[in-house]
Length: 180
Image 1 (cartoon, rainbow, N blue to C red):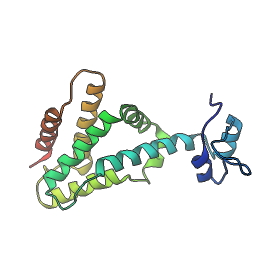
Image 2: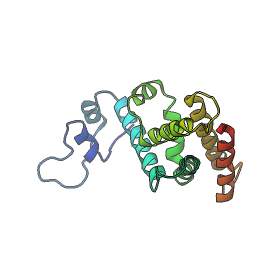
Image 3: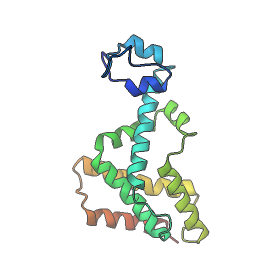
Image 4: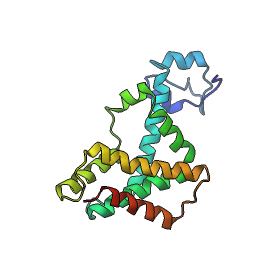
């Protein structure tokens, strides 16, 4: 049960205020107050999911150059996904689990993160250049993102060790799996 939370920005985003008068610092909010400010409790979970996805997008897309050749862009994005998972394991695992929750899956359809948009665009570019095998884009996206997720999870369970050389080999194997 949530007894106290720091909600200064969160409550404001739902039209509430986390401060009263001239008080400064976080306010202690009880569960009843949270229920009042949330349209549904799922809003809190979806907000967390969205923030993790946005943080991952920012992390992966930092330094991303759309003018680079397609293969370099694919490898850059895949490497960024793996590095994010290694550097932020709890967020990575939580995001994967929450993505399977039906209400999150439905709500997330309308909110395409920048990372997903970049992946889709590079796959469109690769298709237009006749670089990819004749597979639906969703299958290609599932293959490459699933492989990267599996690598990170195996690393977290200490089944494998991911150093830079291994990450690069895995990314190249993913590219080999989808290229024409």
